Image 1 (tube, rainbow, N blue to C red):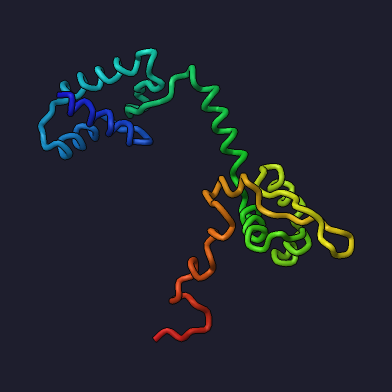
Image 2: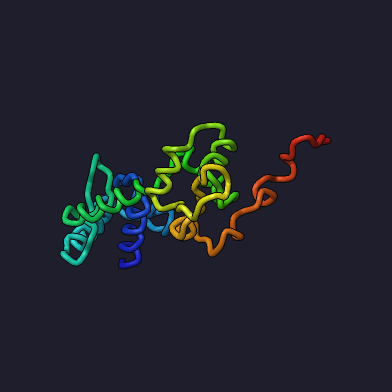
Length: 186
């Protein structure tokens, strides 16, 4: 009985969009090779609902549009909102990713050099990467005008799980040999 209860919990938890009672019953019967009535299933679901109604649980079982799903309790919504805001700050645009890749592989590099590689103005993108802490200013170049030099930051290394820039993937690791330009495929 406890095994059935835990399996129901797991199925509901794994159903990101929720699951209706009919599908829950079918999945459960196939997974555990058992027969279960709709009434028995409703009793199990009610026990789960009571379990999560307790104050020491952060989730509660909801029925939305006849779909069962676990949702965070309303009391935790401010914390979840902060998490979402934090994640939004970390998202990078396509231009941001391209610029970050150029800086990562060519560091230290000036803004002009990045712009020459990308072929577009990178003022805004570099500023956004600085704001997000993904790159930092590491000095000034010895060329005319002493332009700033940019390199990846500790935050970049942490975000991508790298210990050093030597762990960045090399081109040969990314491009499959069968996709090489100029080779004739027989």
